Length: 314
Ligand code: HEM
Image 1 (cartoon, rainbow, N blue to C red):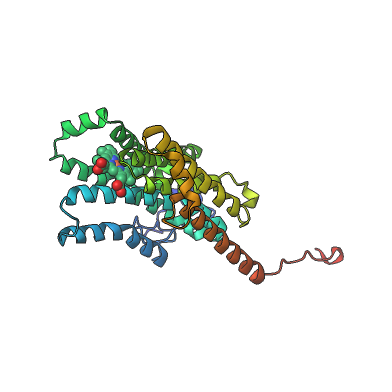
Image 2: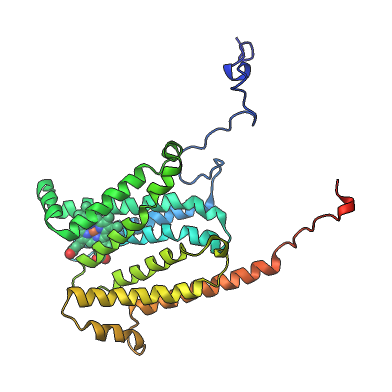
């Protein structure tokens, strides 16, 4: 019997008739497809970019290029990439507004999941380095504050990863956004774990702090200013000052190093640039490029359509 012979309940039930035509086939779960189920070069390229650090790490491991302690080195590398992907995922929304590029938003979930993937690999490598003694690892996590901090961040990231699906988005409604705002404190915890495990040199966590501050400060910009490149200049300066201040506070509060001299070294540009200077350079470069892009878009923007004169309106 043909399908047409028996009308479906949706066709007969007055409340179930779809007004928007037949249901579109749901795109598969493949991360290289866009929302319409078509192959997306953008998503495929970024997906490859997410795997690239892991492939590079595996290659170096296979060719004995990871040094005398490959497990320790791989633990460090995966930890760093977790923070980097978290920051990149937080940069997606600013990119959407400063570049006027809404499509970039479809990359956010993939980048966040990449961060989680590197965090899980990081934990697995640490457990491997501890000869798979799970009970010992658990005790270490409880005993050592830097591990407890990393562990808390990992649990939080796992919850966000688990609830990142469309199904959870629908189920949680407005609460989904509130829950996923936890990514800000969780990134901060990850950076704190980075500081705590660093011995004397905290240059890289200080750099990450500056970028994180930039991303947080950008979120304080009122919505109507978000497409405008001007706020990016003070944000660059404030993020750099914040990075220098936190670097000072860390050295002063947790070490016997001359924190004031390290702070003053930010002004000495003759030798190595301090992290805060790199944050300033990167922030100003972003502001300059965003300004140039904004100017180009103003020139090529379609002229606004004027409303028809009163007499000609229908
Ligand atoms: C159960 C969770 C975690 C454990 C047990 C753990 C453990 C470790 C260990 C043992 C180190 C190396 C410390 C050393 O050699 O002295 C490390 C470094 C690091 N971890 Fe974690 N971690 C965890 C979670 C995380 C998370 C969630 C992140 C990111 C958000 C993260 C980011 C880092 C970073 C950036 C480093 C330093 C890498 C470098 O030196 O370049 N960790 N972690």
